[in-house]
Image 1 (tube, one colour):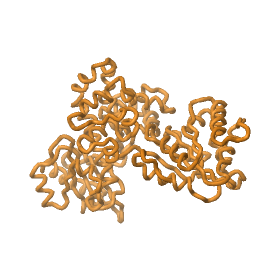
Image 2 (spheres, rainbow, N blue to C red):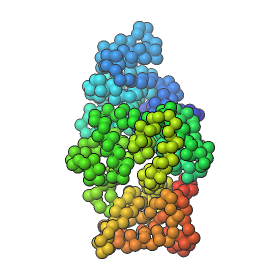
Image 3 (cartoon, one colour):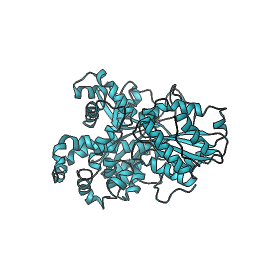
Image 4 (tube, one colour):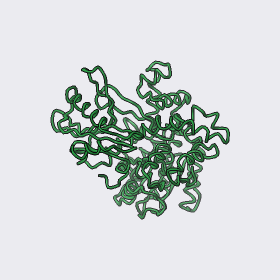
Length: 492
């Protein structure tokens, strides 16, 4: 199947779906496609159905009987039988969907499946029964049934534990946001500094450019401030309220105010459970449930401390939500009044740099080390990339490490391949390198890692001075990573 010309990237996803839906082996098979909203899942699946002559059904929030009627109408229009379909129940409907694959492999897509399962919780069990191994309707079909959903908490449970469909799926595909490099190409931005600033606001969600911003992309570095004012801070654009809608659309979120407060606490720099609880003036046990729900929904990400196994920090997964809580939510009444965006943005620029850009730059550096960096530069293939705090008992202090790259353990100790420091607006010098050397010495004395070949990486969005460049040129364990390197598609 040829990928549509107007589909940006998604080569991996298209290839995976192509292999699944064109598999000629007998027997109907099940696939599950998930991902956060606005990532292009519907576009992807509709394109697959069009390319392979398949059937697509997009569910809506409706009563069970209405959904059955809508499916009957859609399948009648697709199949054109002698008499229209009128499904009495989902057993009959699922068998009719499997019957589409009697002659050849064919994709059968049910999009927004959580809506159907919410109205009829028995539906996963009905599909399990329809796909049992020796059942005639399954054996005689080559339908490739694809269940798709944006409710990550629900989709994550669909194939886990004792769920009815566990072990039934032949495909489990997650459609992720575009990474920082893909997003720069998608937005048509060549300047790496501008690209990272835009990514810190809207992330890698394709719909935010094509539909929400109507193709409006910054024309250059000098246009970034005006772009923020005319798009995300403009009450007339869908981007303005999108962060609030993302939270409201999650079905497992009941007390929206509490979840907003938890995200606001993280955006303010309270990234531990204790820090969040203190910020909200609640007990840590009181916020355990909302934290878990936000994690399951893909809005909050837990990161284990690379140096203290019993400590974790939390990050907001969606950049637009982080931007909203740091910049928009504190002054929401002002922003709702037309013409106030420029004034608010001028006053919020430093807050954006400290609370949004800085942490986002650190996260991009970690993702670069994990997914893009040449292993030779890091000292080996990463098994885990994170951040952490190194305790220094002799000095009675501690040191934050922005990037910690751990390799595959071949012996008693896992190798600490790299430690790094990331500074968005600081020109880095020899003091930063000396600090990393000191931290490496502390880790050697106090940690369970093998630091015999640990390299030192300095990440800077503002560049490096002559002393730092000289140290990198004369010390094989020191490497300087600038924005151009982070966006270099050669991966070196």
